[in-house]
Length: 220
Image 1 (cartoon, rainbow, N blue to C red):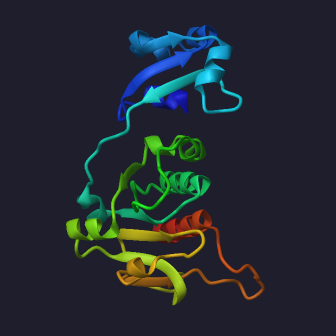
Image 2 (cartoon, one colour):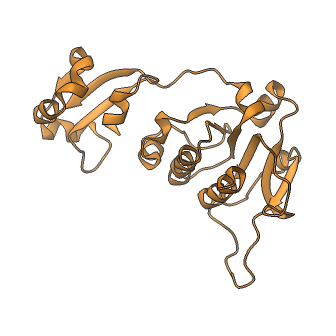
């Protein structure tokens, strides 16, 4: 992930702390950041890293400040995370978005921090390629009032038989309560991921549901 962060130009890099042998092995990669590179020992790296067993480098980067792009929702899909709390789930949803070419993920204000260390780690670099914003659903709809809003609910239409939208928001609900009541009122497409007759699970993991949604919408 550090190599990917240094190779891209969308997110600004503030500082790089790394072992000298890592810098020697990655001379071409580090060349544009020589003024920001700080050689450290393994002991020093362990002190400043949030990982129990740090690798060979730590990169400090600025949070992206990209303005919300309403046009994305007029031509493509974005996930809307309605109160997702688990960092692992959020990171995995970012990976799902990255895999299926979904360009943006919008997090509700009560969702986990999309740029927390655990989310970044779980995203496996997807946070570098997928645009992320924090907004309420009301704010989104004020920008794009006629956008289709799809979400999985009990008693909805079988998503594999329904006419799916060609663009819009795909709502992923909270791990425990699902999609909140206020958000559910604004769904234009109430869908259900059908359980197999032989299946016994009560519900699907939020990130798994996001993956099924993305696959269906992309017709993969």
